[in-house]
Image (cartoon, rainbow, N blue to C red; front, side):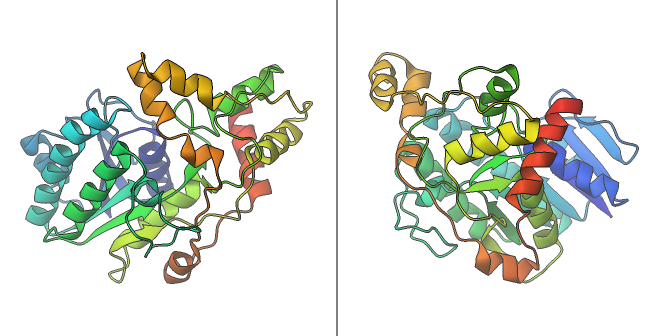
Length: 307
């Protein structure tokens, strides 16, 4: 099979490698032609907003996995960039008659009652969440089959700077420094193992029953303190000091600093429980979440040898 993967961030890279390692051909498109090296991965240069480039890359592909990010973590940038790019990929998919999968967050329902499920009300608690709701609606009204695979904050190999449970947490642990998580270190929070998200996207693309919003296999929630403790144990180092970033200070700074304001807008996800239930999608996909202990061990091993 040939697959088109758009974007080589943590999700796109993980997905491309999993497809390549099982013997499929992957066409990986980024603006710079970057991405992991593998004999089965063909790296091509192209912009996801360029209709001709995307349609050219999609020729002969049997699935499209749209894994791009916006250029900034801001609602106005998301609103300007993401719908346009998704319209391009949906047109290319319609032309080829193929399915499109999208990684998705829980932002669009994070003000709904918990635990979140696939049928939770799309009640966003932020401007960024409102963008996600509109993206979901556009995909679901498209003339091709689409699957939006939602995950909570992810961890695992390739989850670096933009992951709360990635570089922000692991690098201080490995260097014996204080870890500064957002919000509370003691609220239950769902964390999705990145390879489980990638595998769910692959499985859903191959199953005609899968469409609309689904949930990636995600294990029971843990606190940030527990995850930090498990990382330290896997690395064989002492548990570091844990001093959460004060929410009040972050909100105060956000009044004068735009990027901080965008981060502070999402503090509710870390100051209160943030829990998803993926059991329905797991049953449909025939998948189970990787055990936390195994995911943590593999993540630390990657940081030790491959990061």
